[in-house]
Image (tube, rainbow over all chains, first blue to last red; front, side):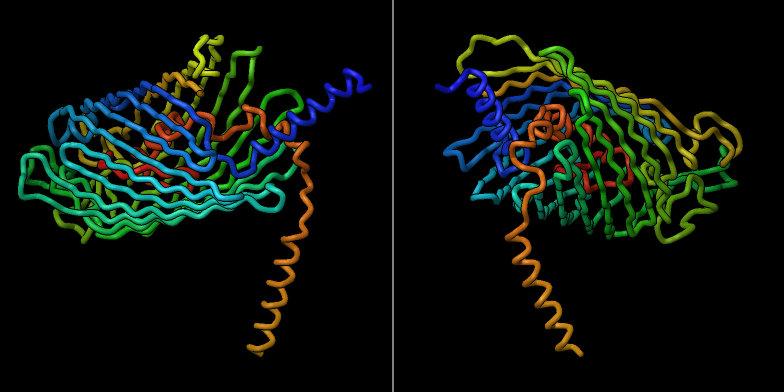
Length: 381
Length: 76
């Protein structure tokens, strides 16, 4: 006669086996639906909107997903306030993805269309991932091809294109029963019209009352970037985890960047999971960036985009997930409500706020805080 | 010289191939319950993760190696 404790032990071992295989073995993503409201507010810009995701497996070998995403932009940013007028616009994005599992190999293809009044982006992706060495290691390769059309509101004759290609490699490795580490490497090449058709650079001009004038920015037609990231996640001695990541980035425009992020995840009771995180980002300026050029047409390429300047950002994050009591619906076996809040501080080292006044090149350096909210519900079925 | 390098490479490949086949998982499937816990999931909320990566890409010069892929946009 088998004792009750033996049955319990067997059940626990079986559960651990199933859970263990789910941790790393090739499995298709869960069937789920998500509805999110997102909001970004900072630097005179407010962007909010919905994001909806639906993902479903069939025949245990295939999975399809669809995502609808929208940005409603209201912009009175520093760029807009100094050289243009505040504006409102919308961007919608649709994504369809298909995954196929064959043994320990997963194939994924997807197509994304992003559309706004002056920019249309198409992206097709193909990825393969393979589990090996007793499912301790997962290797993945991927390729994306993007083809974009850049337009300019108010100028029907303006139409340019951008060709984008991404090549990525990933490695995920279980190191100990509590530690998993990963490495991601990605090369991205862009070719075409890469600057913003509205943005201007400023240059010293004695004939102007302010001492400076503006001219259109001009970027190189190509850009190639390399990024490598290593990350690790560790299960603590009590039920909680810590994770960290470091990324190094460099590109042919002369931008070098470092990113460090750290996070802590802690469940509370049966229904709550809390998260806290910190992310530090630092970059050097593009070779052809200047806040104030010495004269008009000072060099072949000209940029005064603050995203290409030297700056540092700090992000503090908090998140809470609450698992709802059983809804009593046959189809949904688990559902959660989630709220994530991020506070990001950007401080620029060579981008000046020209609205503060003063002699050209002596204005106060620019900086701002942004608040980012993600509120969403998720259901698994 | 070239021949010996080729032979060495071939030997390494063969050793690697047989080595691959005989690699004994040092973390057994039944030892992975911690790794399967929800607090260890890096992609627990794909919609939220994809959004925050989009926020970074729109405001930073760096891009890529995030382990995910979004589409392009004129967000700068």
